[in-house]
Image 1 (tube, rainbow, N blue to C red):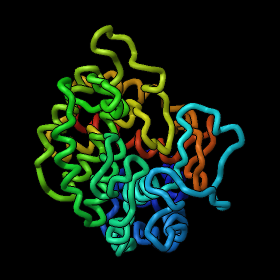
Image 2: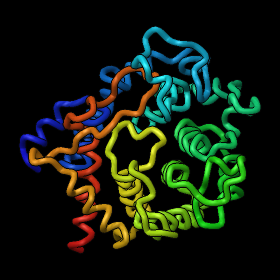
Image 3: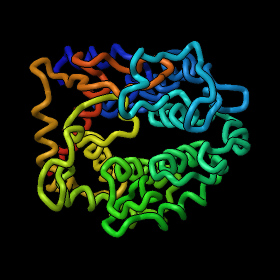
Length: 326
C-alpha cells in the first residue's frame, strides 16, 4: 500500500483503524484487538453508546425515532428528499455498532430490555421481526450478536424467499420479483448470523440469493442487460440500506471466506468498475450522502476522499487479486 494512504487510513477512528490493521496491514492479532477495544471509550462507537436510552433503545423507537433529539443532526431540506430515513433509531444504531465490530459485552442487558419493544408496523415484538426483509436481516444479525432469540426470523427468510432467488421488501404489496436493495441487505444479515452462530439453516437460501446477483453480474437487469440503476455504481458510506456493486463485492468477499470458495468470475466487471473509480491519490471519494437525521457525521462530505470507502475498496481488490493469482 502507498505509505501516504496507509498513514491516512491509520489516522482515523478506532472503528475503522482496527479493520485497516487486520485486513490490509496483517498486523498481529494483539495489535488490532487492542485498537478495537478502544471503541468502548473513545471515538464514534463510544459516542453512540452514550446516546442509548435507559430502556435499551436509541431515540425512543425501534425503526423510527419517537422524538427529535437535539443532539442529532439534520440538514434543512432533507425531509423533502427521497430515501429520507431518520438513522438515529435503535435498529440503525445497533447495526452500525455491530458492523464496526464493537464487543457485544458492552451492551449487556440490551437484548433483554428490547424484548418489551414493539415495531412500528402492527405492534409486532422486536426480536420476532417485521414484514420488511431489510429490517429483518438487520434484526437477525443483531439478535445473534447480542444473544437474543431470533428463531422466528430464520423461518421468515426461508418462507419469503422469492422464486428468482432473492427477496423484496415490497412483497406485502404484491411484488414477486426480487430487489437488488432487499437482496443485498438480506444477504448481509444472513451471512453475519451464519458466521456468528455457526449454523447452516440459511446457507442454501444465501447461495440462491448470491446466484441471483451473480447472474446479473451485480449490476444489470437479467431481462434487458441494461444497468439496474444509476445507484449501482455510486460510492457512498455509510451504506445504510442502499445497494451498490461495492456492497455486493464486499459481501462476496466475506462469503468466500466462509465457504472456502474462490471469487466468482461473473463479478469481474464490477471489480474493474471499482478499480476505475480509484483516484490518482490512491483513494476512493464520497459520491453522495443519504439524507436523513443522524447522530453525527460518520464519513466525509461528498467529493472528498473517504477512508471508509477506501478501506472497503482496497479490501475487495486484495481479495479479488489474490484469487486471480491462485
